[in-house]
Image (cartoon, rainbow, N blue to C red; front, side, top):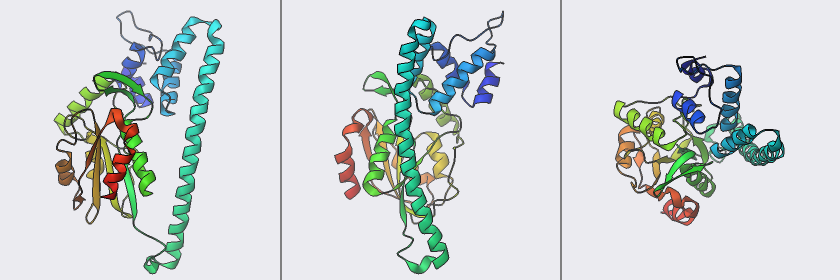
Length: 295
């Protein structure tokens, strides 16, 4: 299979496939006599493993280490087993968090079902809710002059803090075809999308957001604005009567023009004063975020 066919088959970009091969997430791909990548069954099995593990949230470093150990031969089997067990523990914790979220959703659904039976005018049954909608990226990120791989994006960390403080629902804005895992390729793709005004397709876009009257909108600063997928989200709804609270992670660019950009894209919304958080300091941002929310 060609790299284009593999990209389409697994829903990842050609740049990401090249990157995985370059950093040894997958072994060197079989090539034709002319040097063109020609993915064979064994190559595809490695791609499938990488895609599966990345979709489950495993960091790039773990996949690189697994590939290194595999190449070293049978003497590394115990080390490979230990690495896989460590990742299984991480996934188990993530599963528990998902189950907790599902329990919350089940509760909300039961309340809405009761509201349908008894009527919306009962007041205390259905109340307007808050939503934290955010775009966040893990993988290789820029931290004050150096590159670092992270498993959870900085904006996602801030979003979860805000959700915990406000009791808001969470929605992660995810592109159907994500940007590349390595930072430089990612920002190049983001720049091209900005220049062309692209509106990337979003996975699992809610049909409506009518039940929310306040929305906390989070995003990293890409080239002085939001990632273009955030524009896709904003332009999908009528925000009349809703408040939007912008929060942004950055490494020096601050909010830039994003507040005015949101105002142009979110029809009818009232845009509240936003907050900019240094991505490298997000783990210490709880107090700052709490003061911002309470204003």
